[in-house]
Amino acid sequence: AQSVTQPDIHITVSEGASLELRCNYSYGATPYLFWYVQSPGQGLQLLLKYFSGDTLVQGIKGFEAEFKRSQSSFNLRKPSVHWSDAAEYFCAVGNTDKLIFGTGTRLQVFP
Amino acid sequence: SAVISQKPSRDICQRGTSLTIQCQVDSQVTMMFWYRQQPGQSLTLIATANQGSEATYESGFVIDKFPISRPNLTFSTLTVSNMSPEDSSIYLCSAAGTETYEQYFGPGTRLTVT
Image (cartoon, rainbow over all chains, first blue to last red):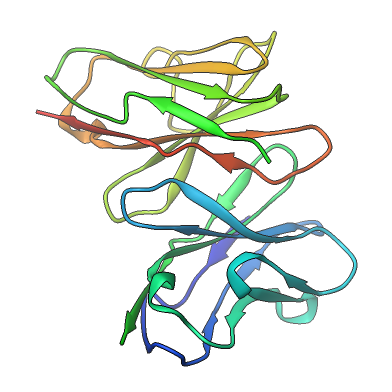
């Protein structure tokens, strides 16, 4: 079955600290992988995507993610978190027809 | 990327009534999608809407409850019919082109059914 697991429901970090959000997937073929961010009361904004090629992908707002096929993972990282990064983060896997979303990780940032 | 707008942004409706949500894209796109996000939950795909064909519904969603129109390559509507409090959710539309697989999302419609 196709699925996405985000093991961390809620993460709290201090401003300036590094961040890693975990994402594991189960998918029959080589997946397309995405990270989205949702600020309160907003829609989803695409942070970055992986289709093929270099397994380390750069996104907007200083985020990056690394695809590890052997671990079926696509973890999101940021070296220094800003207070404005507080939001809900969703990992998604899919193809041209459908995206499957994880349950999300809520990031809280303390000053 | 595509810019997507939705109307209304929010609404409070009585049970038994219907609400139609509009989704407008600023460029022509092949595929549009409708999702439901229940409070504190992730996104669940309701259906995929391609211009010129019937919408494809996911398991658990039926056309009688969620009729969808896709009259052209920039516009779609989702109707939530015969609403009950369980339909209270955020409804989001998204769009994707044929050459890129990422989906771009509208701001969502927050629906409350009383």
